[in-house]
Image (cartoon, rainbow, N blue to C red; front, side, top):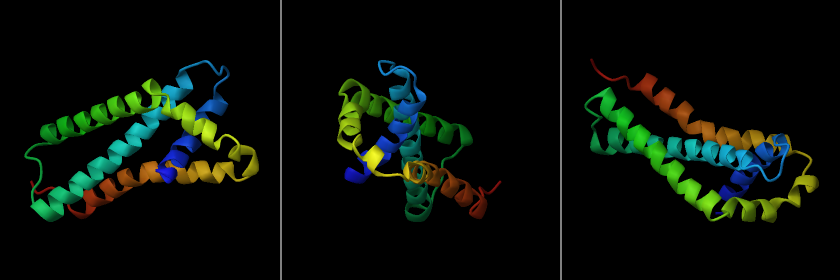
Length: 136
């Protein structure tokens, strides 16, 4: 969990620095939703790999896959809203790593790595769609 916490901290810290007011919920929700979109992408990638390589099947229609993807995103957003916003886990993570911000001069690199980890499943899904196109 330590790596996931640090990944979330990098995203949270970026939105926190953009925010002008500390009491604003805006930066908290932005970080939480970006993290949930990235996590939802990982779930969809694992689901796609499972369906293609293990079950040797696909969704019967694009609408069915869209509904599944929407439900995955909605569930991850609801779950992460509960964990990070309602239970204040984001504040605990921020307090835990706040002292490291000044100690590490390469904050931008850590943010880019964190964003890359969240974007990687989408790149893999696009590559997967190009390598294994759906038959017509």
